[in-house]
Length: 398
Image 1 (cartoon, helix red, strand yellow):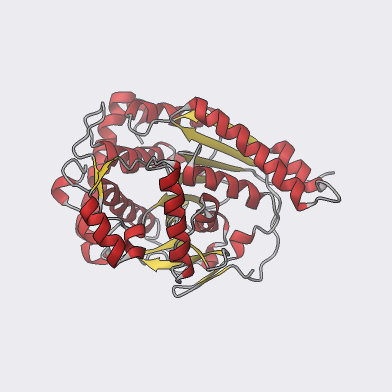
Image 2 (spheres, one colour):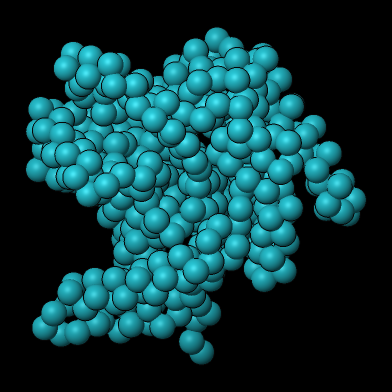
């Protein structure tokens, strides 16, 4: 009798129609269509990165159910069509003479891409999205918490000129000249950047907890996207919804670091394998549309990105596809390649001077010194989640 198909991947990518989210979808399709995904074989080191394959056995070729969670359904459907066309072209290019291999053809035929509406700035939309997932899927193996907003309303020209002239790499990695919108609230009365970048994803993690724990690929993995600008001094206990800070985007990413590490630590209280594993990942510095720009500005930006890469900075991944390297490594690599993740560490995508993608482990500074206030922040998230869950449906409270 033929053997049963191995359990499929069921992966959710928020903000999947463009930027890093679209790059995650591309790389996820490319990697999971191979028995030994190259991103699962990356050698991790705190001091350098390498994409040389480690010794590992090939796993089963699993089918993939990809959920593209997006705010704009029209753009999401267009992105889905573009993604499938790109993937089919990529598969054919890998075997130009012989055509698609039987395994590749089978993977492509079994591939399912599902677009679902999700507006993280709306509690109602976020709960409705989770209900749809629960109604359709028996489990979730991967959740990529990618979507977010960076609401830039202007540029401080004097600061920009000084930073570009004195510290070019830092200026392009952690710009201090962006003027962000301050105090913007959602219809739920919450800080817009905070709800979109942090709390919305927390709701999804809590609502889909049972589906994540049912993952046949034990443990399920939740990948939180951080940023190089997520500095320890950006967390203010009196402004945890980020309505007063002038840097809501980087401040939200600091909270992502805090959330991810403490959620992961909760599952390491004993020696058993945790049902859910949380990873913090930086995509590096990529050229995306998170801040809209014209063609001239885009060309200017990419030129300087290449200059920074050629001068030796490994974090200028430039393309969304390269930026997704560490993200997919966190999703697919054997757990034994990672160190004790109870330590505050995160993965970062890297690229060498010649464009070869890899990944690197970095320390998340300041977390061990502020554990009490970090845990208190998690408590605030949970209490607010419980309030909204009861408003949506008392039966939904987990």
